Length: 247
Image (cartoon, rainbow, N blue to C red; front, top):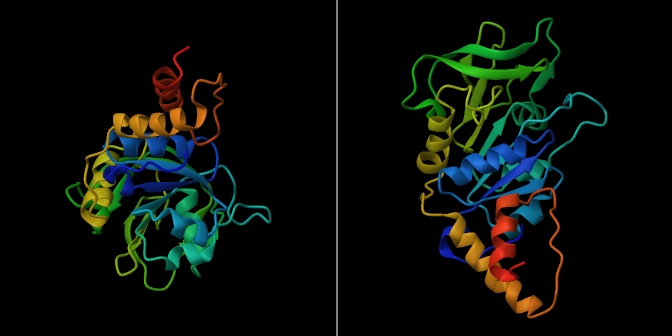
């Protein structure tokens, strides 16, 4: 997906995709909260992100080990854009190593439901001190970057969440986007609305109407074939095709 010109889509969230379909689910959860989101490849440059002018960035999870030689990386300059950042799982780990922390391979992994112990943090506002979250990791953050504070842990994972409010960077080892995380939706709301100051005023119709107009202008009466790309929601394409070109 490229851009949409309505005022609501100017408040967009870009989701960095590190693989395994996590990015798709995160983008859907953001849209369910009536905020526009786009999925971008994880190797996008800071200059490219700046041109997109997002209001927030979310770093998805992924199947790789962050310490592997061929592990996906993120442009370090992304963290200097001044845009609020939220990272999950791999996004949590890659933030740590990129900003000077470390990730190690503990003796015990963590898969499935886990009890999270919250000690504070803006991301957890309105949620209890002990809550159930969904973990899926073997690697874990050992040392947090300078300026970061550990705000949550589990019995297995000492750094289950960290934050640096001064830089508006918040990351979790668990997955708030999955329904198994008890208060994950509240965490997303806290990030989008309280931390980033976004408004829940976007709907799918906003996007479809804008893209339809652009599509008709380019295509006219010609016959076309619509194909899905990695970051495009199939419901968007179906609605676009139906409105723009019919059958």
